[in-house]
Image 1 (cartoon, rainbow, N blue to C red):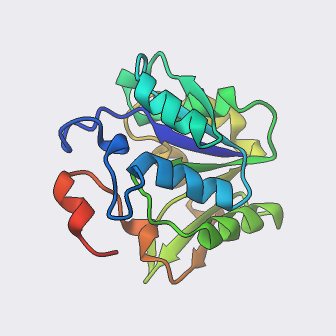
Image 2: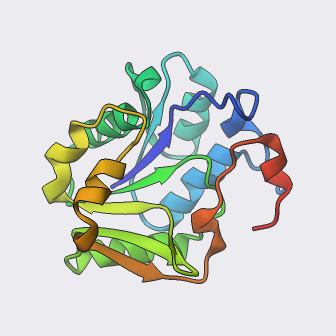
Length: 187
């Protein structure tokens, strides 16, 4: 199951970041959703309360969409809400909606690692761990208890030895869009 985190405020960008078009004309958030879906995942997109434009965009892309009532608490609260909203799953691939350049093939490698028994799986580009991060079902309770803006960082720190890194030729795993100027940077 894919969980697409899209409930941030986009304050460094200037607002409505996920609706902003990339050079190809596709909205940042829509491209991120398309990559997960192209990798074969069912996707739950988590948006902030009242963000009807993002809700509608993700719904049109084929995602199940949910408003996170506690989105203002940070990424951890959104992640917990997304996992809770996903229903029964063998695991979760947690993706950030402001990372539209991750190749579907890279996402499939994360899924395959989980299917092969990895507890946690993540792509690595030139030795640096990137996104998305996959978690096996055994982390359900840990994921649904998250509430801070650190996201799943605490889980990753506590389970360093359980992370299977997958070296890939995909710089998109490290490239997020925080500011409008980030759109212009090459991937």
